[in-house]
Every structure is written in C-alpha cells, then in structure tokens.
Length: 612
Image 1 (cartoon, rainbow, N blue to C red):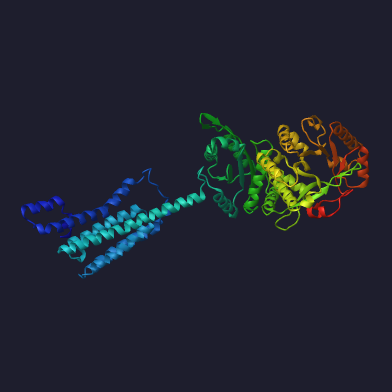
Image 2 (tube, rainbow, N blue to C red; image 1 turned 180 degrees about the horizontal axis):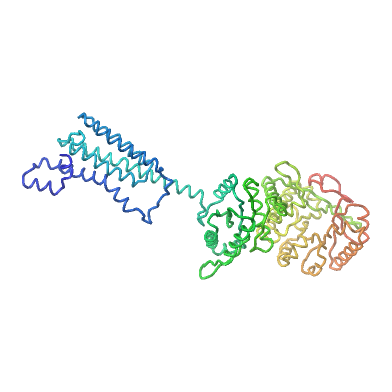
C-alpha cells in the first residue's frame, strides 16, 4: 500500500532487514520511498505550520487586506475547489488508468489561490488537498487503484511532491511581488523622512475633494518653520522629523497632512469655516513652538508661520489654492514669523504677492535661456570736460522667454531681489559685459568709466565676490575703469559688510558710487564709513528740482557735503535741458538721463558718437 510504504521510517526498514522479512536488494527502494514520503510531508504540511506560527511576528511585514482578493472571490474559490474534488472522484470511479490526471482540476484551483490569496490560505489548501490525494491513491478510495508496484509508488510520490510545491512556490513568489509593489507604492506616496504623505499624494487628495459635489467648506494650510535652515545645518533633519510628528499627533483626525519639499508642510482641513480653520492651525503653530528636540545634549526649538485659504468644492483650482496659501505664509514670515495669515480664494491683498512669485519664475526662465540684454546710458560731465572717453552705466533688460516681450526692469528687479535672485542677475550682467568688451577690443579702449549696478544680495554673497574678483583680474578692461553702484539702503542695512566689500574691490583699483542717495537723508552719518567716489542723487529729487524748494535744498546740501568729502555727484533722471542747467548752477558734477541720451544696446551705443 502507498500510504504504508510512504510512511515507513528508516529504522523500521533496517529492522525488517535484520529479522529477514525483507531482502537487501529491496533496501534502496525502501530508503527512496522513505525519503520521498518525508519530502512529501514537508512540502505538504511544513509551509502551513511555519506560516501559522509566523502570524503577527513583528519581523514579518503584513500587507493590507486590499492587496488580496475580496471575500466574494474567496467564496467562489471554495465552490470551485469542492467542485474539482467531486469531478476528480467521479472520473476516478470509471477505473481508468488516466483517472489520476483529473488532479489537474484542484491543482488549477490551487494556482488560483496562490495568485489571489495570502500564502497561508494557499498553504492550508495545499496541505488539505495533498492529504486527500494521498488517501485516495494510497487506500484505493474514489475508484483510484493503490500503487502496488514499487515504481508506481515512487512515481506517485514524485507527482504529489510536484503538486504540493508548485502552488506553494508560486504563492511565495506572488507574496514577494506584492511586498515589492507595496514598497514602491509607499516610496512614491510617502515622504521617507517623516512618514507623511508627499506632495503628489496630497495633491490627489485635494483634487478629489474639489471634485466632490455638495461637500462642506474646507481649508488648505501651508506651514513653514521659521529659520529652520539654520538648525538643519546643525542637527540635520531631526527637527523636521519631530515637527512632522507633532503635526501628525495634534491634527484633527479628518485632516490630511503632507510634507512639501525640504521643510514645508501642507494640511487639508475638512468641514471647517474660516474661524475654525484659523483656530486649528493656530493650535498647531503653538504645538510647534512648544516642541523641543533633543540633539547631542541640546534642546532645539523653532516656531512656524502658516498661510490658510478656505474654499468650497468647485471654487478655484488646486494650483490657485496652493499659491494663495503659500503667499499668505510668506506674508506671515515677513511680518515676523510665528503667526498665521488668512487668504481669500480671489487673492485680495495677496494677489500682488502671487503675481510677484509668478514673475520670479519668468525671471528664472529668462536667466536660464540667457534672455538678458546689455544696454548703456551715458553719464555726462556738466562742467567743461576734455574727457573724450566714455563714462556710462550698464543697464540690463530681460526679455520674457514666453512671448519675447521686454520686462519692466525696475519692477522686476524689485521682485528678483525679494526672492534672492539679485546676485544671479548681477553675475550674468558682469559676465556679459566683460565678454562683450573682450570680443570688441576697440570699444574697450574708449571706456573711461563703466558703471555696473550691484544688488544688496551680491555685496554679501562671498561666492559672488570671489567670482567677481577673479573675473576682473582676467578682464581686458583694467579694474580702475569699473565703478560699481550699490544702493544707499542696502549699504546702510549692513554697513560692515558693505565696507568690507568695497575694501576688497578697491584693492584692485575699482571705484564705487552710492546709488539712490538721499532717500533717507539721515545717511550722512555713514558717509565717513563708506569709501565711495560718487553720490548718485536719487531721481525723485532731480525730477522735482524745478518745482520744489525742498528738493533744491536737499540737492544743494548733498552736493556741498560731497565736495567737502572730495567726492563727486551724479544726478539721475536728468530729462531736459532746463534741469541740466539747474543742476549745473548747483554745482552737480555729472548728469544722467534723456537730456543726454537714452539707454541703447551696447553695440549701438559704441557705434554712435559721445554726447556732449
């Protein structure tokens, strides 16, 4: 009998040989049956036992139930398995030698289980099926004759082992595939540092909410820790991880929290009015301010700012809502941080800030595509001067890469400096100017003074200073022919850095002008500290010179003090001959404006004559 032969153990075989009940020649067959029988037992039962013992083990990752087939499919599977057994028994009742081939029916159902159900489900099904198969074949049940010949028994054992291993191996392979897929999906949807949803997942949530009909009012909050970059340089991302945990622990259960970018967080607040949204987010800001992160024996703390916009489904697009919340957060930071700013979907007072952010993107695109053009405008001496070399200011113009229109420089430069693009623009202006003179040596020989504006960001950017000094040393124009203009407000804001910057470049021979001079008028206190060559009087005074006694008095005072300090004055926005004559009578040294010439592309500027 198959069952008796397969279950006989190794000591029993040797015992039979010892008492003479079996021949030595039959011992190899008996050992082979013993080995295959135990292997069948291992293949049929051990996987189920191991999986049952491993249930709930913390070291084994458990997948969510939605990774497997639903309950309805499990019921259908059970019906299919029972039907396959009945068909196998019915086929075996005919006594055909090929009746055992109907095992393919339950084997197909087991493969279905391996593909669609958890490994434990398949392992238990395999164990039950193999016991049933062995009973039918070994005991001659359901019309299947028992294997009397040794070779028949061995073939049956091998067949049943294959039947047991195929669904089991397939089930483990499918489980590994599910684990890998879940890990990839988690990586695509979850921020690895905080375990929160990432930007794309959050966007999907908000878009679904916007598409829901008859949904209650919601709010979108944008939270940005204050001065977190300073802490990150010291403590890595420990504080960010901690802030994410604080927000997750204290948010409303219905809210969706996500980490945006480096240190920003976004929050979708469901079913809340503007007042409720403000209270919820303000509570989160208070929790962040109270949080302390331990790091190397230190306690790190920070505060956060937030922008909140409330909306109803269908009221605005996701990009618009996020832009308004971001702009409101930026406003909260500008107001000192550790506060909340509310925005409206229509923008309101934050519309200008959003527009500025969009212009920042366009300026970046223009710089990336080298859409910057160099113009020049003359600075002409008002007193008789025999100088025939050119004294001029380099002006830059940006073309919008989207429609090739020219951007309004004054407004766009204010936007650029606001979003820390000043140093990058200055670097591009210096590069293009020096490259042009190196390509046009005859024009370079005509230069007496080339004035270039520098933003406040450039004067404190050590990387920019190093690049500028190196570039000037390699320039065809000697450094003493360059005059760099820095604004009075940026110089006074960080007087020590401004003076250090001036000293570094003066060591090469460069000159300096204090631009927009007079806007504060109390800046005379700083004149001794700032070693500049020129005062460029702000154009607002020049424009009002002929109509305002105050403007005339201011300009006269600036001119006299400049001359006492052995410096020279340049009047901006000199637009007419009467203005030019009035400036001459006040003793102003130079004039710049339409009365002399208009800004011209650099190539055209050097093709025309020098204005007198």
